[in-house]
Image 1 (cartoon, helix red, strand yellow):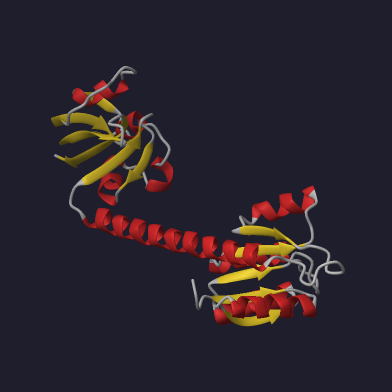
Image 2: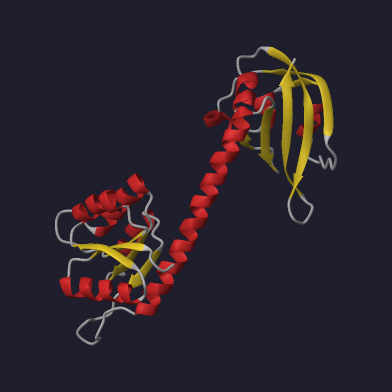
Length: 253
């Protein structure tokens, strides 16, 4: 992605110059090159780069892994490690920060440049694309949550094991279960049906292929209060036509 803004974090000035020059030749915009983790965090906040190329061993008290973890937590900027360290303990620490890439440097005493420009270019392009898709997904999720928050119906969706994966605010009001508590719970516990057709979902062999309409179903909310609801129960299917969950749309009576 030509023109992408990049921050270089490298404590060896010659290597930092090599990285910066190579990135400019590839069409990227190098915003700055810094040598400490503390500077990396400061520049990430000031410049908001699209991506950060990070060495692990840095000057100062903070190493690249600590800096990457803080940058990811605060700004969500993707990081690619470009480092000479591949020992197991370092790699395990680096994995926690969920880097977008991990490129090993060679020995600069034998190579004109301790890394391959093509490897770095490939890692950057893949990272930029994945990050773009992740941001798009987040935006779509936010839009969906906004829509669900404003519809007049209560909506709950589950996976194939009936575990709740979505519940909107209207459903929270009726059932008494907040999103943070309901996600991952069995639908039967959230709705707690006393009588009616919703109890069919409690069967292990359920394979309902059509929407089920129900009226005046009796359930208990989280506080144990009996409530009547009406609505529809719809099976959701994957691309192969196999049921992979349920969507219940309902209202209190």
